[in-house]
Amino acid sequence: MIESLIATIDRAARYTLGLDLPAARASLRQPVEAAIAKGPLNALEAAQEWAIDNGVYTDAVLRRGVRALLKTRLEELHKEYQPHNVECYVEAKRAFADQLRGLQELAILTDVANEQHYEVDTEFFRICLGKHMKYSCCLYPEGVRDLDDAERAMLELYCERAQIEDGMSIMELGCGWGSLSLFLAQKYPKSRVTGLSNSNSQREYIEAQAQARGLTNLTIITADINKWTATDTFDRVVSIEMFEHMKNYEMLFKKVASLLKNGDSRAFIHVFCHRDLPYHFQTGEAQSWMARYFFSGGTMPARDTFSYFSSSLALERDWAVNGTHYAKTSRAWLDRMDERKDECMPWLVRCYGSEAEAKKWFQRWRVFYIAVEELFAYNGGNEWFVGHYLFKKPSVE
Image 1 (cartoon, rainbow, N blue to C red):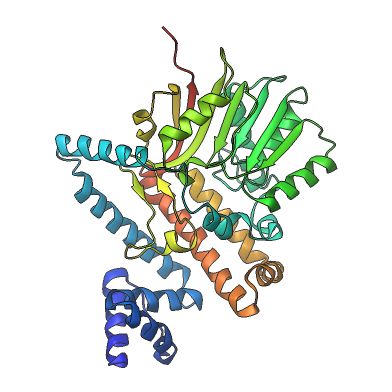
Image 2 (cartoon, rainbow, N blue to C red):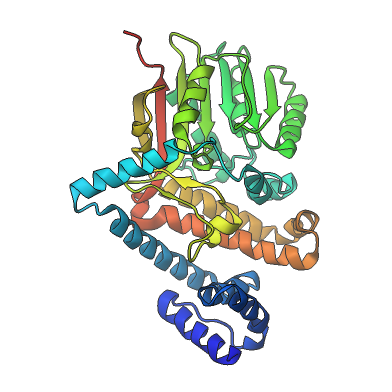
């Protein structure tokens, strides 16, 4: 029975994704048997996951598979939202917003998100990322090809669009490894910069960098945003690719508004998004590899999702950044990881506990970077892309 099922999985993989499973099918027996215990629908994914973990697929095959899955995802979303039927489309979009609004927490699975990304050894990311340690979309204007320059180009764009001036008090929500917080503290020495992260390793890295650069105007707070309450208000609140990890935007926007001073204060938010159709990253779905290993509890907002949560913040201006900028960013991360694989492996062993697990996770990180690149390159970068939003407190009549 097992051999017959494996042969069926092989044919299904070729038919649905164009992916060829290895000839050495004996190695598939254990993951397939485990999948059967959970239910027959898990068998194909188990076999494909085995192939990913063992580096079986070439990059060309992986990219073809990712594009096929993206096409399927769009077909499913179109069935769900029915954009050809304006009444159904509008109601479905509103229902998604109402669902987010009805959740009891700002974010879910925050501990899992930490494990998946933010508590991975910092040295691994120092290999993959540029010198600013920017773990988010960078900007490749004409003439910029180097990752370090692309990081700086996007950081400068934030300053321009957020209308930041020296002397302002600035709060960054979800500061990562401090690419923006450190940049702001150095660029605006008269400003007071505060960063919030739920990762101890990130705080330690940022504090060490601030000390090495002689920065005394930067404070980093480690806290779960679900439980954290601020005691100060700020001229600017900025957030870069944190809202995608959130759920209840109504509660989140109220919290952001509470951080803003009265008057000329502003909030600037950078998120990745889909052009029209929002959705959740759910680990229980078929083909949920990304949600399971890299984005548990995540949300893909649509470009206009924030417009449903306008009671606490008023949108002043928005911009779109073509997805090809993110595709180039992720490709740069992949290339750096591949070029320095020997340097990566000891840090992955330290993080994941054994050489066997490290080899498996090296392949998973490769697939993650490839998937991100293909997602944002899809349809010329016009399907999934980055949105920038500038908010202010609503006027009091």
